[in-house]
Image (cartoon, rainbow, N blue to C red):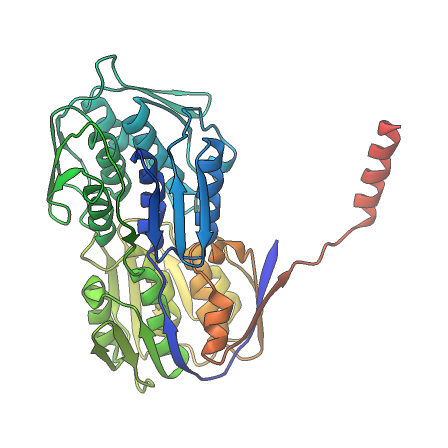
Length: 440
């Protein structure tokens, strides 16, 4: 276990570059096993989730090499094998192997996914899609058993009861090599869906409508990667650094951004009173003056992203008045709130609504990053706070933010990541002695 130590209260300035999108990467890496030739990806972020996915690939005899931001995956010697719990439990996106393995082999045994504890994220829409394509699905001993019929998957018309990113990705992965035409309605419209469709189409898939309410897929028998695919910039990482720039910046440029992917977020920043200039693929954030409290309601894309409600929270604490955040997607995404209270924030939760009041100052203390975006919020709060903030469970931050210490130091932050000290109590020593005696 590691922890992040931040000596806050400093104004930051300079430039920071955004990596490739985590939410694209964690879908495209499983999708790579659909290819019958080597796959090359550019702009791959240096995050823990990538390492975890590569370990899962290795279990299927799929080799991969990461050179800088370039990842090469060789699925030509892949073997079909169950992926039970273990590595699968370490990240939510591992469930994309359900659709990818089903599309490649016509069967999949995958442990139920892990990931951040931000509330219920059922996979009923995934199952609905798989069954519509002809597969049988059962849950046995904590793993999903998915089997296509002997004749293979067939095209179908599918209507999702809710616009789910995960279900949209998984059904696309299963349907691209199914026989016939698949039409999926009420799909997620996130930019990462478009990025996945672009990746697959460049391998010979026939996917139309990504980014709209309806996706149409004409199944093909084979997929071959021929050109390197560059992953789109991470709009969530971008929003996080834009929030940081507004909260503690003395003039910061955030580079490698597709600003259209951040329209709803940037609209809220303007409403708060943050001034910024958009220049091609970068945004310059001016030092902030008086800020106004707002109400934020998260919605599916193109609405305000649930992943950005936590990173923007510390900035709102600087604003005058009263504000609120309503997360319609994950109402339980509030684990950063008690940690911010420990730092002196005037913030509370009532009936799953986050209530914010102006806070004159934050004080550094020990806090826990219980999930990725909560950790990002605490990181920004630590940079704002007087004194030293120690963020435990920093591995959660590293799952979603690559080279974070290097990027913050480039802006002038005093931040480091160190190992947690191992504390041995008398009780621990006694337990070890007992075990040693038993071993003898």
